[in-house]
Length: 385
Ligand code: SF4
Image (tube, rainbow, N blue to C red):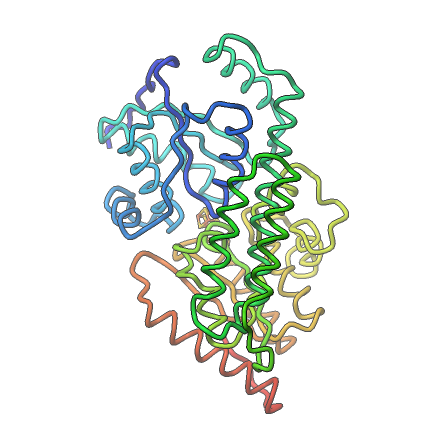
């Protein structure tokens, strides 16, 4: 590495982009649409094998899977014409705090002159609105009103919340679908309609219609199922490519997936809006205090708390998704193993990296779900993991 970071393009020539992260596009797209700034931003494509290949080729050795996918995804956006990146960052032991520096060095080495905005996700309120108004004024000649910004944020959040609500409904039903793919196809149609609705009331109508359509699908309601909580490192939990579509895989095996990490719950946590939420990240961190009194960062503490809550609420088991090389999730895995030994609550820690084969994921999930069925319906003991 040359170790030099290029300055980025002049402000007037900047074309923004951001990396793909689950349904983040719903939030950003909803916001920029409502602000009327769509033409200045290139949305990221969904992650694919090309993303992984690009990211792996240019990442430092030992980088975690989220780094590789985020880097590859941004490179795809730059190929499409973007030259300024908006990137989330964090303080603490999670490598997310170093992503910006690492990626900017990679881009400089490749002679890609990329501008950069960091958003510190532990304090989303700090100075961002002022910065946004200044940027907007430089581009459009006048500052946007606070009302316009607030309204755009409400619309964006409604869209995000609606898509997530639809995802929850899909997860509730997918294990009972009669024909594979039926529920996901219906979900995609509903998600598209939510994206096309511009106002909160339209978003709500689109959501309700999509939910009705999902519920009207022919379902095998007599199918025997088990209930499985999905948690882990946020990027891998939220991104269906990164987690190899684990929810659909579990559902096909007869496990109803219950994901506890959502983009909206993370945003609420970052903005201190989940103080009284019973199943949010803050509540999970509180629940984990007996095992981990210090806050380590990332999703380490909350993953332990989610296991405790899931056990208390009667779930049959939990899948903990962790990227290879992630120190925080490694700590969580060890404590989860301890919790599993103490309580008998089955937990599968699934490690993912760019070399993880589909067959390996299938084999581990099959064995885990099979064990859950035996415990639930044949009353046998034993702990999976
Ligand atoms: S939590 Fe782990 S995998 Fe995720 S960004 Fe941080 S270090 Fe990487």
